[in-house]
Amino acid sequence: MNTIKACIFDLDGVIVDTAVYHYKAWKRLANELGFDFTEHDNEKLKGVSRTRSLELILQWGGVTKTEAEKEELAARKNNWYVEMIGQMKPDEILPGAKEFLISCRAAGLKTALGSASKNSMMILEKIQLVNLFDAIIDGNKVSNPKPDPEVFLKGAEAVGVAPADCVVFEDAIAGIEAAKNGDMKAIGVGDPQVLTEADKVISGLDKITVEQLRPLTP
Image (cartoon, rainbow, N blue to C red; front, side):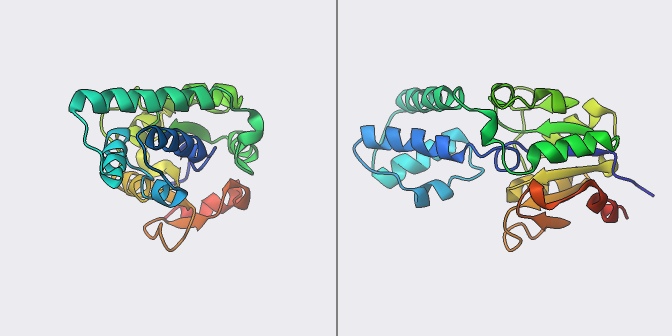
C-alpha cells in the first residue's frame, strides 16, 4: 500500500497569487500599444505561456508585430513583472500556506516546489519561504510545460520519493493533468467544478490538514 511521503506544490495560486502583477504588467503594455486590457481578459491567460499570452493580447487589440518586436514586448512586460514581484513581502503568502508547509515537515513529509515560473526562487526569497522546501524545481530546470509531468517527476526525484507516494497541490487544470500523468495524487486549489480531475478540491491551504492526506492512499 502506498502512503503519502511527499507534498509537491505549485507556486502561483497555491502559495502566493502573482496573477495581479501579471495583470498590471500586461495592462501597462496594452495601454502603451493604445488599447485596454481587463481583468476578464486576464482570466483567459491562466496557465498560458508568456509568448502565447502576448499573441492573444495583440490579437484582441488588433495589433500586428514582427517576431523581433514580439520578443521585445514580451521582455518589456517581464521586466515590469519582475520589478513588481521584487517588492513582494511575507504578508502576501496565501492563507494557511506557511502553516501547512510547517505541519507537513513536522509530520516527516518531504516538501517540494514544482513551478513553471523562472522567478520562483526570487519570490520564495521575498516571502521568506525558501527554508520550508526540501527541493525547488522551477522553470529554469525543466523544458516541458504542464500537462507534461516533468516538473513534478523532478520534484519527486529530488526528494527521493516514488511518484505514487507524492501528492501535488495545483490550481490549474494542466497542473492536475501533469500530476496524474506522473502517477501522483492531486489536490486542486480552487473551484471543484473546474478542477474535476483532482482527487480532492480545497479553496486554499488553510482548509486542509496533514491528517486529511491519509484517505488519499489507495
